[in-house]
Image 1 (cartoon, one colour):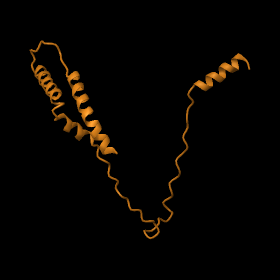
Image 2: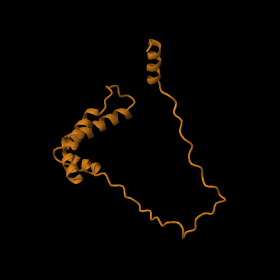
Image 3: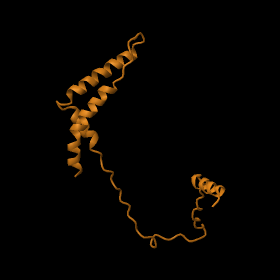
Image 4: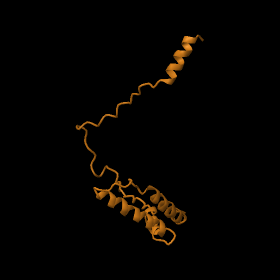
Length: 122
């Protein structure tokens, strides 16, 4: 195998080739007789209910516990400060966000909700 054929093979194996899809099956012509209701098999379409996610309700419930109350309080105070600073055009203080407070709150609520969620999922 020569060096040029090796490089050509390497190049062809590393390049992306164009993919072509097959044509979809042809639609039946309108001239064909449509099956009557007697000929059609009855297919009852049952609506499958999408299961409800219990996690948001558990997180909301855990926010109200005494373990997560301090984190919720700090987050709410931070949101009030940031909202007030955003509405005040003369605010010259440092721009603040509530990411740290939010993560503390989410950490507390997910720690509280995780065992309850696993119990519901079993």
